[in-house]
Image 1: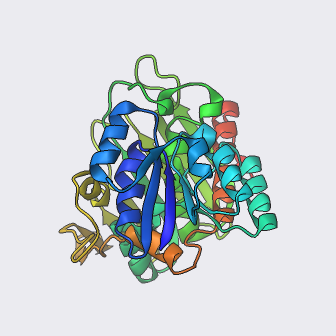
Image 2 (image 1 turned 90 degrees about the vertical axis):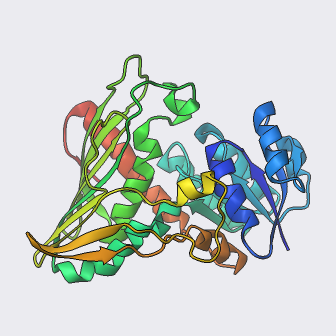
Length: 334
């Protein structure tokens, strides 16, 4: 059995990591770190065989894998502690508050010969898997549009809303980490970045309305949106090519399923959603591929690294360029 310790039991730890770990054959969730009494009670109820421990106690345990699902400011610290113990590490996105820290973390892991990966779960979203399948039918892709839009008109008491730069809060770090990663996975390295970052909600300390335009080295332009203040939502993906277009609405349903207590198994990730493929009114409905978040930990259990952390460094460089672009109101070359 792979003995796993989980640092953090907020949304990332409770909704994503703990359920996916315990659903993976051969993995044993032996310890959970959370100081919040309410979350401790939730963890005990959901995972009665796991010990509730402090971070120091976790690093004294005999573990095979440590999962870092704590606030962004602590990602590097905890990952380094796991590496120093010689224990494989999963770090939730964003990998680190800066590309320099992320690169240093990779160097540290390589020197210690410790496996290190990043939880970019949205590479296994149903709509993203479908888009990868149909892209070849679009001819030469010219523009890629991708959105994570929500309606959350009031800020909430969470570190993601805090203005201290050390927190790496705001939507560009949070949802932008997924948007940029997916764009780079599809269309390769980025040449230029332009961004508009706004604070739309009263008393907002961090960006809550984001637009980022990327020009990839192959000429494809990616237009990426993230918003907590979108009273109406655009399509999740819209891809325009020389031979046709693909468009799909809505969001992958795996997060809601995990939050509701469902676990990967038969028919996991299947949805009734469809996308539209074709030209103008001459389109065909395309059924979405099943989502597959469970594949991430299945890859780890099989001895493979599901996400190369070097990709997270590249994405963080794009995010940093976006902050600079918005601040200086200019296109930034990478």
